[in-house]
Length: 410
Image (cartoon, rainbow, N blue to C red; front, top):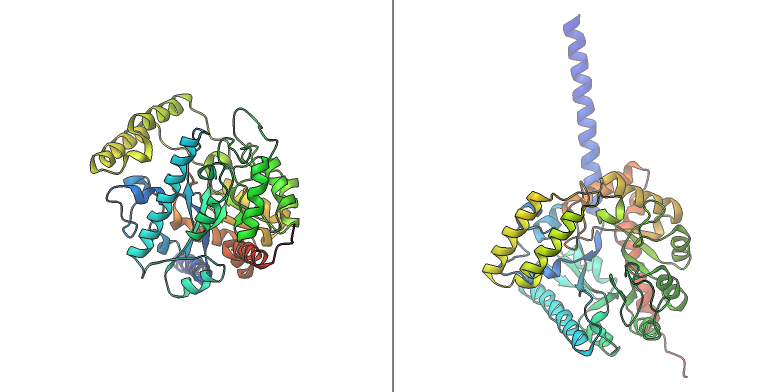
């Protein structure tokens, strides 16, 4: 009798495991049917590393990177927005010129990557390009600008970057500039939102068909962009104050206004914006000293520079291991946004290769876990289609349509 009961229990266990496996397979199959886009890859910086090959598999453990072709494929990620990021520097003619050249060089590296692997990557400039490129089994490469510091005070450069493929642009990063206030500048607001030039930038992006991105901008900037723009605003990688109170995160009233005007928030997997991470002044000071000593990513153009950087970084990580927010904390932001504004106004970004990552979603291979969590929460395949790409592509179509409209005579 006992033997029979054990056989029945084992059968139930095996049957249960089979059901779980079948469910996981179904979730993965659904994820693969979707066009999956991440709206903020900082991976272009790695293209400047000596010997770094985007077609080879890397890892955080081996070289501290989070995106490459094998991992994109493993994660069922069809592509995304490769950003031309420029750190905020001196607000001088020389500083603006250097930032402009840095951004142009980054754009050219992305184009060179695509040209070197035309069977694997393709530049996209319109919303309809995404499905077409994905159907060919190639990676979708949109270009974006994070921090419009490279524009300086010359808005004619917006057209230059548009011609290079830029279709998403944010005015500001971690410090105020000539265009807008940052949410995190320790000096506080300078312009009380957008500067006069920043307001002209909104109009120029509308004219060309560039989607405006308010991530990193102050709440006042987001509010003014929503009032001035003729097309909806994207937050390419942001989180929510209602879940974790951080200056980078937006409050629910602005989230509702964003949605009411057709906009979209892409929930950000940057741990420090997702949940309270224990602060370590010692770690922060050591990190500043490390990057000052080795020159940051700019020192990685030689074999010696790469070797020195990796050795110093590994030593740093041994002494001060990364502390990540949990996957559940990240999903709390996603599910709260969905509760407040629904699946027509929510998307996902890992902020990978720019400091992003939470437990279980620390590189692009973790994307299917988000799909599984959303399905478990009751969201449908149609909902996931919007969240993973449909919403941001809708904003691109709106920008494209507005750019075709003739402007009124003055």
